[in-house]
Image (tube, rainbow, N blue to C red):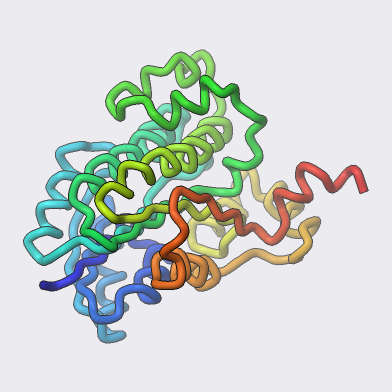
Length: 273
């Protein structure tokens, strides 16, 4: 039976991970923009991969179900790479919560119903989730365990509480790691694994937009002050994903891997030394 890797978000990071983990598998590249998926498919096809494309809106249950149906017509879904999302400079708080938080919960719920035994998934979160102050135990559990369709109705996520796009993004990315930890229990019953990677500033087209935007100065300060003194690359994220999704990562599930060159360490503890 053909094994399928589903890539949701066909940008630089999703492509880099797919190249590392999909040799001998069929790659289904899905994106909100069909042109993005098609461009990524050409690059991967030219590199020897068997590729199909799809258009998907992760904030739509019907759209995600259609993507799963397309994947299952090809073969067994053994890998899921969820790298879709919007940044604080791209959207209003409500849209960020709808796409980055609810959309991820939806992907985890629906793919968790069909992932093959031995399969694995990666969700791309962000260092921003680690910059959010601690939430209460009750808030953590609500983000982790609320039914998908009840998630956006949580009191902590209402418009009067979440008024800033960056705050919405931080909550969404914290929620992603919490959600993955909870879903790892459910996925484990199918013999499958799921983990989160929280990258820092990775040089993708999206990051370059951010660097030119209103938060650009803050991004540059983060790079200058962190231990690595640079941003990261999609291939470095893919190296971590390859460990987590491959045979050497079979004891790892429900975990979040922060890789940000030391930005978060600097943020919380740099002033004390």
